Length: 564
Ligand SMILES: Cc1ncc(C[n+]2csc(CCOP(=O)(O)OP(=O)(O)O)c2C)c(N)n1
Image 1: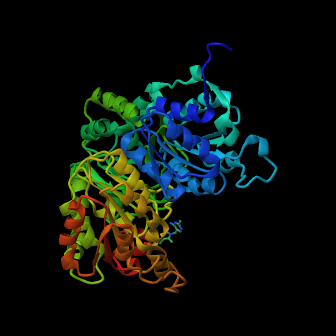
Image 2: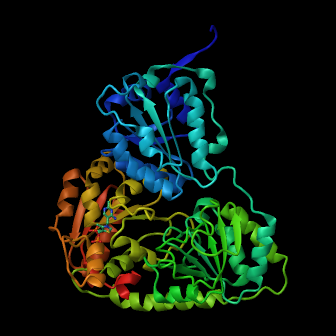
Image 3: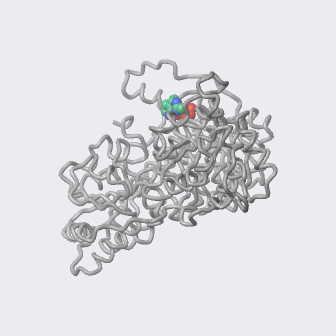
């Protein structure tokens, strides 16, 4: 075997990540990870490893990073408990079509079944929840399996992958000649699939005959960078463009054709009416799930559905679908624009007028509440202050609870692209802080905010240490209302106000964050809000503003089940 150079499996993993253009990795150490960490320590590579305090947040950071960079995010954690803790972030990313790779170190293959500490069938754990997943039992196959993970993450509908890295594999020899990467898989979406021309022609035909078509965009257009193509299609028809919560950024919300968010979380009667009245609905990169469609009631059954999605299983899952366009959103919309341009007598669907009327109705209700000096502070007042202070490039990462519906309904994004991130696949509390940190690492030149309820704060606050250690100038905002407010609002609206085990004590979040070294403020008086938020946002380091805010069941939250 003269002439062959060998690396250890741990070294090969470092080189394979490097070859795939990985610059950042988020994770937490463990006994079974020691050879991998030692390789990272010894070798010369361009990867910054960010030590987190909880594997969930390592995965959320990889997720936020991937969403803003267009590159796969990488996280890692140790066997057993580390693997179970990293799982929530893998699930969220996978279901949100965000490519992250989770590497979990594992006990040696030779000690399997002998009750070694932390033993867990890690590939079985991830199997139903990741897009692709394997255990690197054979070191000689390690480079090929890392390539497969990147290929799986970045092609088709992007998703999350998992590699278990056994302890003995980390020490076993790998032929250096096997270390290479396919440059296409360093970013996503890779190897875009084009649309069937017949389906494009059929869609163009239907749209050309429509009187009240509307587009409903999910996360697909932002993932595929389809903004310009979408605008082109909509402008040809003067067609209104609605988005789901995850679809925000498909179009600037100040665009004349942008209707805003539809669905039960952030949609309002004025936006819903446009979808209800549509004769044709063009779903783009959208699962037409329960929230977007108000439990499959809007659009109405009689609407003619055209559905563009990279995943054939999504198309037609919920609505009888006239035209299925299984393709990358950008390529499909470019082809659709071209097909429409070739037609004469395209209808004008009144999109700009509908969008402007919907925003006017939505903002009329909002503006008076936003100007209110009531205490506890109304969420609308926080939204209005943030819209005044933040520049157009800022990134907001929002948790479930108060933040999501208010940002979805009322924050008006002035630029298309990825500026708003929220975890709409599973909506686990405590996502935003980690995802904001990943987003900041991925796009350090812009201001990043993490906005959470006090429930989420309890899930995530340990990670302020990481934020301070890396001096990330992120501003965290806590809606402090001493309650799992979303659930209490459900008890209020649908369960006879029988409030059961949803209230908890008030925490001094500013004091907790200060103890971690975060510069913090508490705001109880709405008059102080603009000044404090501005100071916090402009500060060149981690900051937190704890806002004593209205409980959701007493608020005018744009959540349709409660309004009814
Ligand atoms: C991990 C997890 N557990 C439970 C839930 C269910 N849940 C959805 S919203 C919510 C309440 C959120 O409370 P908080 O963060 O305080 O925000 P608020 O609703 O009061 O604004 C809960 C418990 C969840 N989304 N995630």
